[in-house]
Image (cartoon, rainbow, N blue to C red):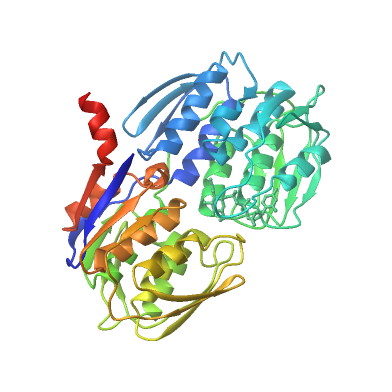
Length: 429
Ligand code: UD1
């Protein structure tokens, strides 16, 4: 198993390029199932989650060629509508094939994803909405069995809670449904917006893009012909590197970013004393003279993203004073707290609120990555810790960060990917 060895205490400097957004690419890859014609996706990040979903498409019978940041996909000859546990268990976002498979083929089986480190993460809202569109759904043997023999029907869906994946699944289901679907309390994350734009550009009438209420006129079963799609920049990757600049008191420039998507992150970094030069597609962070504490609450877009909570926890640890961080979206998204405390942080948890007392120094340690964003918080802490940190279980990082150690090394960080000795020994045998 790979781990990262990080020598703390180096100032960073220079430029890096932000990759395409994993969370935009995943629903877009799933949406290709709405078409039986070839299409090209560009600016895909080189991360495991993307390869996993492309593999799922191939298993279903899709023709996929994938090189670097480009995939050519043709789902003309889909031979199976069953998304197996073996794939869905590797990546929850595989549930995104449910809406498109059901609306195109009138039936599908998708393994239930189950919980994960950050919480239970049910899909009840996805299923309830599909039922409102006429689907018959049964849960059997760990699978969602869904049928809609006469196609899905447009319906008014009112989500009890804002759900990104639920909104995306229903947008895709609605695209081929009969009649108009209205989604009230829809998510309006940039990734949802790009999915809507892709489907709109294929001729589906969608109103309310970028708002909490969407209206989608389905094609009544006619498959779509997509134009090529260039994936938007990853706002969480960008935010993570801004935090790397902030925590190491470094000036760094990010290219190929959309700064409007990272407004909430920029605002919080400004409140901590950092400043920014923003140009069209690039952003330079100038460090604070002394990091101030921060109070934040995670919310749906355009609020402060839950996917940046762990990274800001690492920053708060090194700030001068006390910070309060409240997690409102996922009940268990504080797994990084105990690992940060093992490095010398002073964080107290009560329910979904973390009280963080800034410390003067962190110490390198053996730490364990527990989920994707928690892992990046440990990397950030390691960049400023005294001595060497080993971040274990970095398969979490590989799911969502494109070449993290390469990009950080380019900025001057001392970070190396290594293998557990037993893996090296086995290779030599
Ligand atoms: C997506 C993102 C993830 C991000 C999250 C919130 C992808 C691949 N992942 O996850 O990185 O952290 O949005 O911005 O885009 N919920 C229910 N029932 C449901 C669905 C959701 O109760 O049927 C709850 C969840 O448990 C959670 C909240 O709603 O508490 C928001 O979840 P949701 O927006 O659906 O997150 P994901 O789409 O899974």
